[in-house]
Picture 1: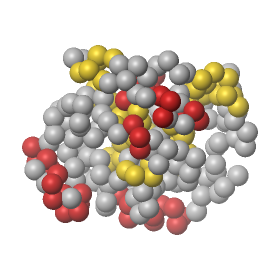
Picture 2 (picture 1 turned 135 degrees about the vertical axis):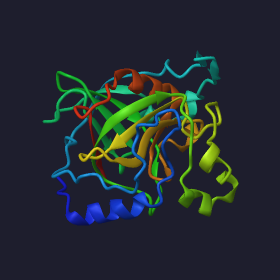
Picture 3 (picture 1 turned 30 degrees about the vertical axis):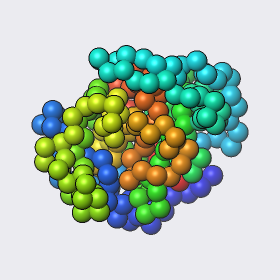
Picture 4 (picture 1 turned 120 degrees about the vertical axis):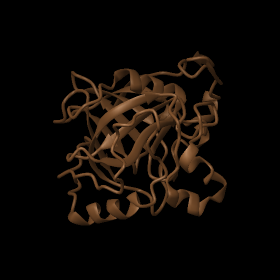
Length: 237
């Protein structure tokens, strides 16, 4: 069991200044005061042993969603451990909690009966990783994407989207769904759980701090999540 320390919180604060996911324009009530750290969990909530009960290999086909034609994922090119599956998962966290293990590249959605849905994810690259606790404040289908100014400074090609935003679509970095993480004070952390058109990045550390998922998987997770303070998100490294 790994114990969190205040140093994790300092690292998170630094990473937030560089976060690559930001708010959409269609939710004006979402705070944008930004660069806010999440609280730090006391201990690692992931059990030492996680066994697969069921693996889903047939859920990655082409699908039309809200008029957008998502292409099929070449599942034979995705490591089996990163495919959606039901696992045995004993934890003190209640059903509905999301646990993100950035080191192992897994996201767990806790079910009742000591089980969880496990998804493969992509995480923040070196210098952009974070850990802590937050909650899903709100969620959106086919969101707009507004890169923060810090990202535009690093990548001038996205500067045009800082104000105007990139509209929903198959090339939008937030993919088919986005869930917005706030801290215990109700402040936007600027971190998201979202889909991605870059399915090959799942299992890698390549994002700017957000948690990215295969679009077919984020649609499934989105359907399970009920925004509010009761939907806790625990991110561990």
